[in-house]
Image (cartoon, rainbow, N blue to C red; front, side):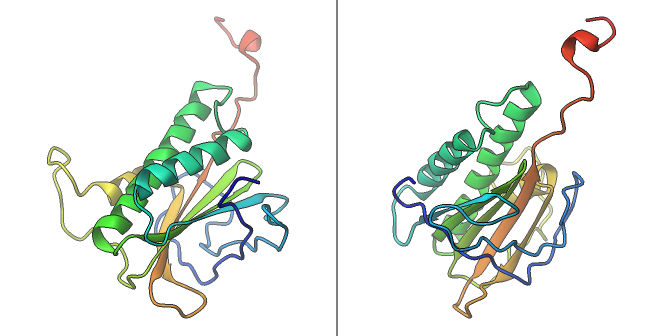
Length: 192
């Protein structure tokens, strides 16, 4: 177990914001992580937690922490270009959600990663109860303000909910799945 990794329990009551990739369980309910040290029972998956209260460099720390977890879980380096691209998408989404927490919510409190059988749930906790909003139409050509557009485009589902424990603030979450492997091998494809 890496320093800063701990097991935790999931949040409940999340509602799905959007769904794009057919990830099973898009109800938005977090899965229970169990009580094992460093890994939870997330359908035989794992949970990693990084505490960030008042830590500087949160975006870089969260991105590095996520990259290390994805490497341990076999998402990186990836065996296909699609898998490598999906892992890079995850790192981009983590950066965006943590940046939003830094800019609009007083900074992130913790990052939780829940992985099981090619599915990943990312949770970023902060102390601001206001949910992320993308009400203001923005031109893609203008700098800034594109974090929620990135989530809409790349996440299988995402949303925000109040913390379970009644503490002030919220959890912004997103879910993604590794792309499915093609049903053929490279040598079996026509024209290869």
